[in-house]
Length: 163
Image (tube, rainbow, N blue to C red):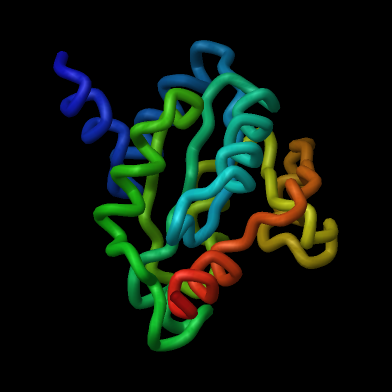
């Protein structure tokens, strides 16, 4: 399989992702899930994804679709299309699977994929993490990864726009 095929095969629709996750779970693999817009990848994103991957064996990343990002971030976002963002995240060695979602939150993905570990960045608390109660109720873990200070997609966009 070529590197390009390897990247592309990591991007899955939800039904295909559920099948793949269930196959990994049967093999005893610990499933980790995180999500975000990942509009412009930066050091903070990469740190979060690498640390999330260390929480288990299989890292699944839910990525907001373009329509979902617009609702969350405003009409000028996203900068990169959902296909580009999915491809970029899937190209990372620490990421095993990428699933796009169109809803306002990733709860549908979390309920379908049933991760053993749910990971979010440092600006969240257990009470503000979508899916935390559901994962915990099944005996799973919720992990909050501290931010790498000085990195923000909005900050980067503001810098670029000011040039």
